[in-house]
Length: 344
Image 1 (cartoon, rainbow, N blue to C red):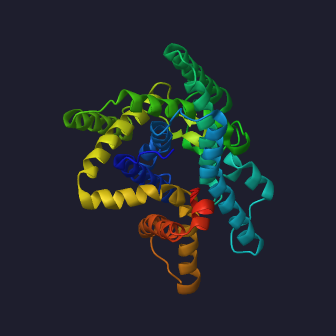
Image 2: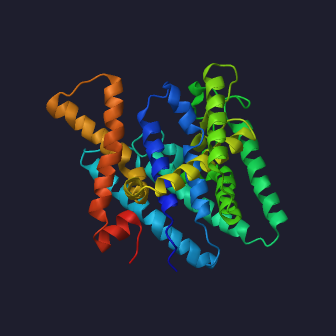
Image 3: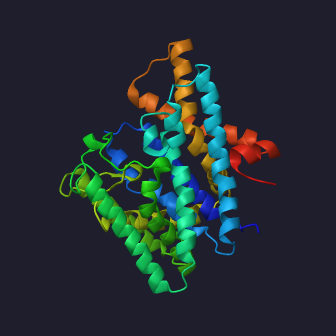
């Protein structure tokens, strides 16, 4: 059964993937880094939840989602291993590639934690959403949320207040394929499903008011009047309880209304929808392609510029090169299947 394609969903994906590329391109000390990380990854779990349907059996659901997510995941990993074996890509121990998740920190494949975590999240959420009682469903999600918070407090460095010098610490739970992040991801996924079912939309005035409010929160945090800890989802650094739900949910509502507004402008709609439809390809390839291209500039052209210019170039390359790859993969059924996870 083919899903109806909603333009605002693709536009929201485009905004989300642009923020992910920007977040990866920025130095962690940049003022914008912390605030992008407050919501950019939860945003994708929420968007995925808005697209969820319960019409499949659990077996057909898993099969369909596996083909869409894990076939490209395995394809890109296999290509990386081949390139690594001939000395083109940076070396990563095979066991780390197989285990994924936090085992890939500080590598070109670090972002790959998201895909198997999303698949596991979708499967768990499918089972939760099979519960007929809305109250019991809500209680189940609360249990997952409390479990995620408890694990955060037990297994991360500082009791609830995470300093960024713990970013690369090993003092966190490490499960294969980032399954330890699933409890929190399920909360956002089910939230997206519930928001879609409720058809909640903000008026223009309320959207602006919410954006101003979040802007004020960012201002207070930046001036150290308040201190909201870093939110790095795949390291189980979930910031403060309750706040870690309010911030992503509020930002999703703002981005949804912004996407609906962009949808009304034909040129912008076309541009952002194209980027949104390529979002998974951009996710898989932006780090490798941007790093590789800049490395070639350094080696063959002795291209040396200051950090702000390199950051800007990296972000642009991280969007354009993967989009070109997506455009190449899309016309052919074989490449659609293995690189895009689309079966004809």
